[in-house]
Image 1 (cartoon, rainbow, N blue to C red):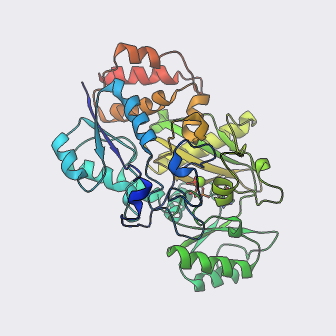
Image 2 (cartoon, rainbow, N blue to C red):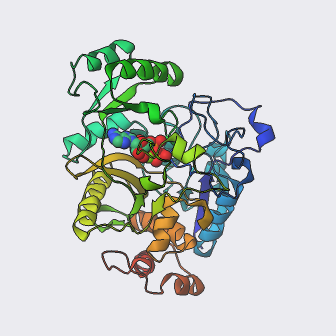
Length: 418
Ligand SMILES: Nc1ncnc2c1ncn2[C@@H]1O[C@H](COP(=O)(O)OP(=O)(O)OP(=O)(O)O)[C@@H](O)[C@H]1O
Ligand SMILES: [Mg+2]
């Protein structure tokens, strides 16, 4: 039986958080708590599980709740013996002692801008195979500017951008000394910290229509987040987020999730930012913010899938990811950011985008998790023997949008190595 190490960071109980060291944590897969069952996230503005717009962040927000960890462990159980390896201080010693056949990694890490790469790097150090992207890709995608440089080199459409590390850099942008036009009502810019997620530091104020606003808001963000800012041309069109499963030319885009800006309050800036994720989306009054599958013309869907898969490949993403896309003024899909450690809240009421997209493709939560593991095992030549009851569960003929039998593809690929 395959021995599956399961690496994760579990959110501390509320009472524990004050005793733990803070970090420059970035939450790139946290989901809005409108209907979350995770009680620690309910009371969001007073809870340590929710980020706050002024930079006093929840340093553990990106870690997973016990419900998510249990759900993943249960999903993996039919494929082997699951060995829980919490990614704490003792993780290297525990991993070395357990030496599993493969590690299923959802650990977000804690410290530093390379934290998402720590568990995969430790696996590499011990020569133990692991699921998902490698440390380099995880660190690259945690830097939105470096990610965009790579995408630009490969011709993947992105909004023109400049990086501001100091207030003087902001002044240079305001004077028109970079590739960006001077911000105005006709040519707005969007600014955001390079290393954050879950819309930390991304509020309506980041929509910039004057040089004065650029200096004011930009200075505040530099001061608060103590990291460079990305200043980009504002992409005014429709927005989508896309789940991807698989590898290389066999990777598939799950049914696309459209962001419904019509659900935001009147006069709101059309962004899926802090207010939409954490203030307007309330358990008692959830925003109807997602449409999946997105009702868009086939030609646009093909264009979005093309951009998403090109980005996935050139960034070196593996097994799964979630990719944000927005249309520019000409209607061309531009890549906004890539999340190689996607959010995977198990309860459909939680509105987690990757599980939602998987469901629209006919994949249950368990099948999504199993697909990721089997894609990794197939890629690495690790044997995963699927017992007959799980095989029945997986092979009921679901097809993705390319009409490929997604679930049975999973079973076949694992048989190939089994
Ligand atoms: N250049 C841009 N033009 C228009 N809107 C933008 C741009 N960049 C970001 N946005 C808006 O801000 C939102 C948040 O940006 P982004 O996805 O980079 O942040 P994030 O906090 O990492 O998101 P996530 O919660 O997906 O991790 C986007 O979903 C989009 O609505
Ligand atoms: Mg995003």
